[in-house]
Image (cartoon, rainbow, N blue to C red):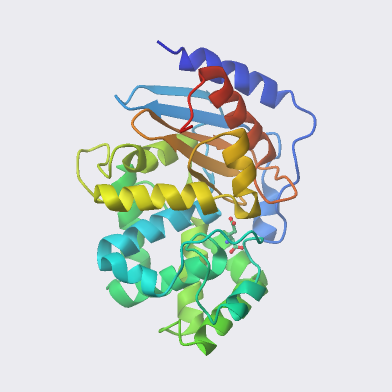
Length: 304
Ligand code: GLU
């Protein structure tokens, strides 16, 4: 039996005493207010045993981690049609680059970069009756937690400074790959990114990706094929232009966000979330990545 609690305690101790913690994202002004010394980690195994260390219960801005939820929601609504409007290849570029989008005629490389997530947001705006309320309910359902909410200040802050996302949305519109108004789609997108969750809540929500599409309450949200596809996308595209490095060092499918969160999972075994707000130069949580490398090394468990 692996002693997960002991491993997490050791990781939390070494991360909390680390001096090089990375740099907090400040291009969304509201995010720069976060305390850089925070560190949390939480793991839930396949039989729902929970293990925590550090600030695992504290809420933070999930940012791009929300792209996995929006993709899941879109796939559950329109199935394979998603792939008519977004590709499934790693970009090898930062999350907000626009050059590939123009080069590839408005079809984003994958749904986990910003342009791809904006197309997915457009799909949700078209297919949901009350897009923001319905999407929030979907995340609450996956997490089995009705306390989860948007942070209006973060959404507003990003709207005021999200020039590259406006550029991406306008480019998509010019290629006919955005059906709704740019303003409406981005309002939805900025809200989805502003959702606040803790490491504990994130592992609950991501449980379906390690459990063949079935959530903790036993409800099926995805087919096994869809679950496979989302995990494949997380592995190849979940860490900006550092997906190769994450697979190399950690060896798990997962997704990061500029709020400093990372969620990763080992199918059939466990789901783990970390939070440390300082980012490395590629935009991934510096200590979060190091913590997960330590976890897969100590447990000798990865997908490889
Ligand atoms: N809302 C952020 C943006 O669009 C998400 C970035 C991220 O977490 O990767 O810039």
